[in-house]
Length: 351
Image (cartoon, rainbow, N blue to C red; front, side, top):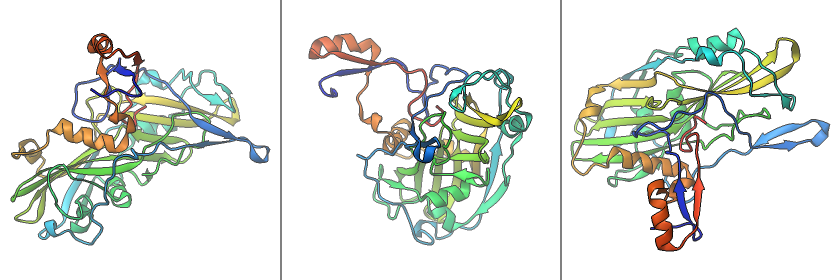
């Protein structure tokens, strides 16, 4: 059993993030935490956020960077449909209490109707699109070496697909210029080979991205996108493709809204709202094949998703101890207990 600096670590609230896991405790309706640096150079206060970086201890090579991968030798245009149903609860549209106005606490305000419309009526920029062998090759490794191998997905290639949702796709988490909010990131896109046989490849991937629905007004940050791609190696084609925001959490999207105050038009309020998007996915090919694919020697879905998360989050390297085991283990090891209480997930972008 590992410990950190001689301390027994215990996690008192289940991590509720991206992955195929049991639901986590419900997060509060609104919350916020800021980690800005105040810069007063030139007499004008500015805020610069330090983006959270990916896990520096996980070395992941670049993925395929050529024109067409040899595994997709027979690939033609793949039709991909986009589905997106954003929501905003009525209770979160009025009486906004959290926020700042020029560095001071804000009174209650309602989110303006035009912003509510963006958060409830937005639709995919392109409901239907097609992608060829070149675009799909970006989700493959440079070469196939075996189950469990991981690689980076080129961010520009991933962004090209996500733009099917919205033209304001951002892969770099660099849109935080207000003095209120959460520390952004980590950005990135990673894939893992879950299973390989002479007949097929089963690839999982995880992508972090956000959408600028309105510049300076609405930043829409899903928890993450989980993807899967099945490749028929004999025909050299993609059998099934899916990229989606997991919906098994009560909170799976973070909304940053900034608007002018009706009674003080020269001032703006910025607020963070936690929400749940019912559907946000790209689907192509025979989606039914995803439920059927389970080759011998394949990584378990949970294990594969955990490995992808570890590429993003350094804290995944910690061996957390379940609360029911902490007292006995601490006594056995003669170690003090360091307890961490969580009210929101650490392992996604929803908070």
